[in-house]
Image (cartoon, rainbow over all chains, first blue to last red; front, side):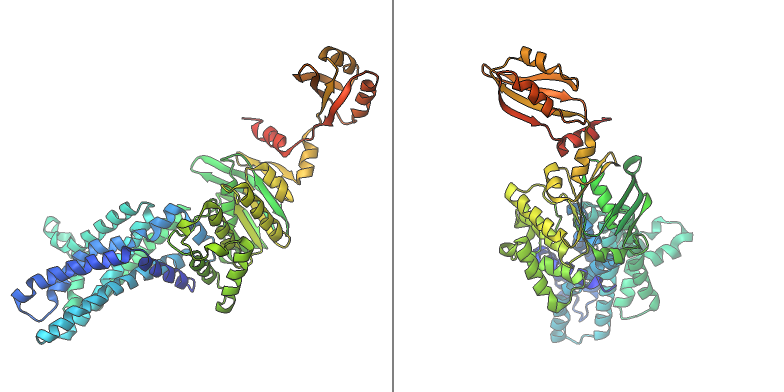
Length: 234
Length: 312
């Protein structure tokens, strides 16, 4: 397990060595900033609900872009062979890479603290839902990172990894809005599988163990999927 | 030190490595030779635990590779073919990262990296990104990476492929130097390389071992036929043929080249007793002038061709 730390450090650093990190963060801030402030003054409410309600959709695009290279690139250039012949286990590799992605998501969220800070200058902000929202955002980011990592472990092609990861995240986000297509008997289960409902609960400031368990289980299942995909490769 | 028993690997239906048995002693430099696609890389990958064998076992210092992969990986240094390093890292950062994974303490890390930089001659490129390095430097960084924890066993997959002759000589020297204390297994399809660096050569073809031994013993065992080359002045083929075919042990005389003044022939001799004395006695009686007279030695090249082309 200890060997996950150098892998995490390397992956996290390598985001910031290449321009990817800066491009992704800039796009993320631009999109969230635009959608948030475009309606903020029209609505005239001192809360971040609008920002958090958009977050799952934006994350569905942005996070697979962050995770797509994590494993695919290694498979493609062959450095995977070097990595796995060093004294590390597959669990170390996956955990290190997963943590790097999660911390990158956190780094990406930090500049958005400017929004609540701006709002407190304008009106009375209720910090409960804001902190809940950020906690939910990290959980959601972790779950989507795990999904992206899984997609990346399946292929050596980064573009395929991105599209597959995005498709899975997108479906999970929109699942509860597509329910009217589906048979009544499955509604309960499918509604539970949608990521958006769980996230919106947390971002209202309601911290329910079911929602937390949901995000943790999505992360775990995806990471285990990545583990199996890599183990079967060789 | 390393015992390989009945190691076999199938890629779906294709048998890449077929029932290989090897026993490698400590301090040996073993060369794995074979044509392209013979199963060299697959064998090495199974030795490192990167590939799971379809059947058979690898024991290293009494550790079974399936049961104690981490212990074995700690003992090994491995350089894959074409040294696939991370593109975006500086050489120093890369080596430092590898040292962290290998669990080298902070205090010793810098010393060790300096030592390896001197040994592998990569001081000038320490602060360049890997993707800007030439093939030769990349290979050396790969070698430094493999040796960073001073491993007992070093496995090198085609360590000199793509290098220029000077670099090849340098890398060979490094390998020989390390090989004094460590066990090294290297694969190559360059025969002179195996001859120059290895104590022991294993030739594999189509996944099977076809020869195993020191280069000398391979050469000895390879041929009961011995060819003698003779270059003469002032002689013509007809008379040479007539005089030398009197000797019983000569089974054939072939003209290789003939010019106005010179004649070069090859004498195929049957077996062990050296025929050179008898031939000399025959020639002495004529007025030919001997310019060159030598017995062909079996090179690794000819052995290799014989063994790998047999059933092709």
